[in-house]
Image (tube, rainbow over all chains, first blue to last red; front, side, top):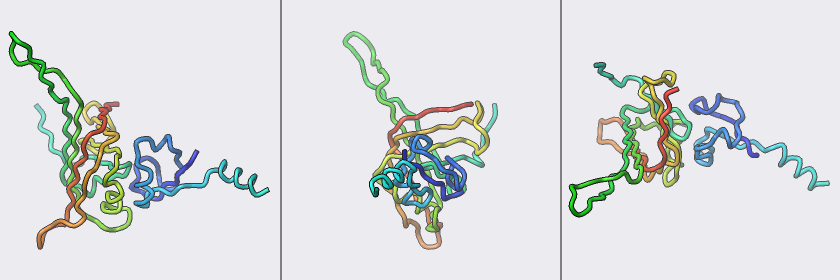
Length: 56
Length: 134
């Protein structure tokens, strides 16, 4: 599951620095929040593991 | 009978608290009336579709993470809006109204006459309304 880091103290769904998953952002237009600078996508552990497995 | 003056309304747009950038807000909750009049009776109506409208006036601000940066990417998309009469805790006397899936059709990044405050007026339409009191 993709997770997102809160970058803004205006973001009401989590404190700045907190990591949220898509469920916690239900109803939020995530793409718009990223474009506005309130959120940043965090590479998931699963993605990292898949990439490492692919590289072997 | 208490008279309520809005002094500290709570407004979040797409999860972003922008109460301190707004000076006017209204939320209209409507169930459309559908006529069901039949011969031999008087005019009669039944409830139709829910129709939500949220109007907010924001002071424009082009700084990072402020009004313009938050609103601009939302045009032409659906988002969520939360409105409450006060920024305190949710309660029976301070209900929170959450509108999900509401559509923002337009935004006026630059709008003011000479000498006036730069403002942007937003109209969100449609979506689903939930009222929370606890």
